Length: 303
Length: 259
Image (cartoon, rainbow over all chains, first blue to last red; front, side, top):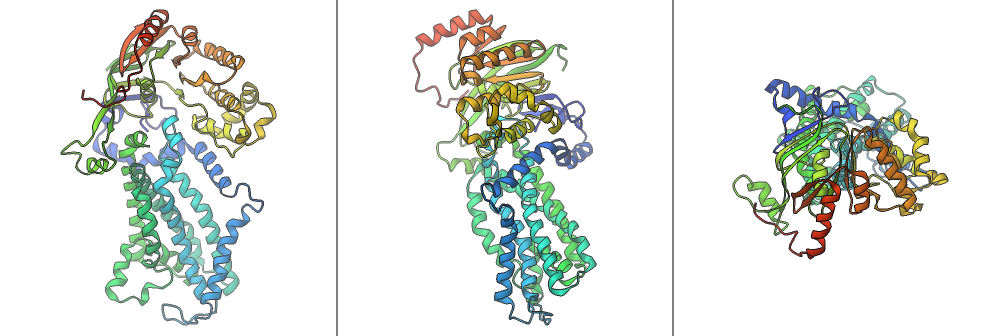
């Protein structure tokens, strides 16, 4: 958005001044000041529009189960059923994919469940992001809607469902093994990084998707394949040497592995994996924001 | 650049082009090789618009379909950016470009008021405080708690306008919004705009000449993206009506051209 006042951080900023389609108010900053402004911009925007984010988020959450009597019970049922099915299907295999003996018949299902929660969180955003701006085309074209907040809102919505999954994973871990490691306290940190990554990804994919529908079809094709390129059903400890490193190029590997370490194995994730995943999250977040803001003006015209 | 303290909107040599592609695939070529060659023809929706609006002015904007009225308003609101030229707007803008753009059929009137208010930039507490007043202005009674899909077109318009009427803005931009609704409600809206004019600035687009005459103290006639005439409403409306009586509906008016 180019509505920035004399003090750009002031929430009721009132001045619009563009020359040849470029905001003049941004122009007279030094490189460093402009960079700091850029880093802070998404947070300022989120803070400024907090009421709007909340209202839209609430509507999106309501919408999912509107007209159903059971409502949010469905949100709990789906992961519960998938957990039950994995237990039935894989419960018999007493050896974990990383060749350690399973402690109980439920181990493998818990192992898979943890990976799937992370993967589904990603998949939900990957499917929705390319058409996100089309969904809200009326808002973007006809009102002063902060389009950059749509990525935040949709990620928050997906987080609500992922949160249900994580809660269920913790509950079943506790029910089956009767212990929870202290490392589960680090799960919120993991969630924060993952959300930053997904918001950035959504900015990038939604901006791209506004211009061409191909992004939508591409993600529909790629996402299911990605499930098998991510150690969800297996552990990358069973992979041969070069592949076990290369698999980290699929950034989801880190997220899957970390949540599994924290909850299922109850140990701290490796430093290398953590650093790489953190780096990827932060980079994706700012890159996505940069890409989105750069194309913001064009998006309103092509929708 | 310094401006008169009373100037609230100012545009200089404002122009807006939309790219027209002969083929959908040309877009990709443009995105990839746009720095070297242009693959599209431009449709210039606006050319060389010089407009100055001072605080407290009420400006009517006339013109035929596709002449660039809405594009101009969108640029002033900051929804889209001009291709060339300068735009300078000082103040909080309340755009009424499409009534009920944010409305959701499944949600109740009450929920929609919350959404629309938030989109208009009102804080949640402000919407809550003004809620009764909005409901009273809309005058749709018990339907406030019904999903919007059960509303008539008129009721939707009433609710949408009621929300707009409660946004405290410096500049109100109304784009052909009052054409729905019965005469009594239209009069209520016009009365409200009258009272808004005492403190605010109005940009008003309508094809109803009597409304323009009543509300505006200045009128701008835009023709094919350029300002053709501006000044006293009665004078401009007279020449506008005269012109559209003699012009036929040119089928080639929306085609691209070089500037």
